Image 1 (cartoon, rainbow, N blue to C red):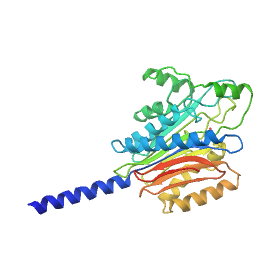
Image 2: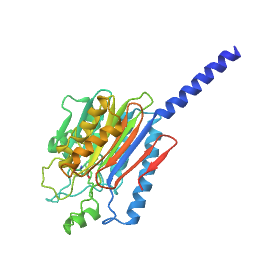
Image 3: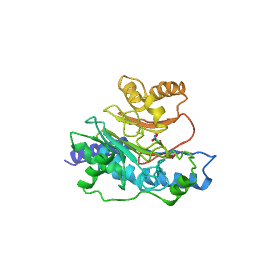
Image 4: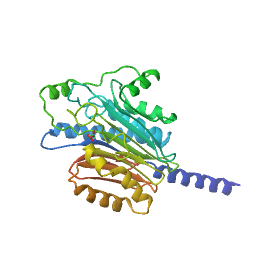
Length: 302
Ligand code: ASP
């Protein structure tokens, strides 16, 4: 009897270790450029990404990958360091329009909002839309849906962005945010949120709420940042996921896809996890800011 109990205990113990080791989360916060951002900004981004990666992992221990990616992206949206949610870029007509999408690799459903105004967390509106037949809403329709579903009017503008806008300093604060996670059941999910490029023509559509910027299935999940037009031209996230589905390793899939991006001199970065829990990230122009955490190993961009 004692041995039976012991065996069961060992089995359970091992199982929980395996489960614990399987869960992983990787997040990104767009790009960092030594030439137009200070050392303080770099350190602040490193600290914030480390903290959010750990919080997201803690959340993942009791939630699905799908719930976790939305949670992680909402934390990134709430941090004014990034160009998503609070701190989003202002467009050429002085208005902030944000886009966000989420994809459940298990059900292969994507939902998103494109060019939504005045909500604190576009990713939560995107997440609510997963239960609808019409899952990607744009502009006014997205805002009306958000209001009807209890999202309060909220201005995500910060004085720094207004100053940049007024000085017409289109210094390309590429700071889209994203999260990819694998949960204890091996299910994958991805979420991405952006304030856009800054100073864009009103109506421009970013990659972030498309399958080029945010894509997942049962084999792989990918979130991108960079110049939306380049990411869409290269179908970046969808290509990487398809290649992994067809048998390539993450490294091979990234390598081929980023080689193709080079032919258009594309500017992009991407983070990914595959069904076996492998993590990968790469950028075409340094440096994408990212952090990953698996409960033990915490990695952050340098
Ligand atoms: N991909 C975003 C866009 O083009 C920008 C970014 O990643 O910062 O709208």
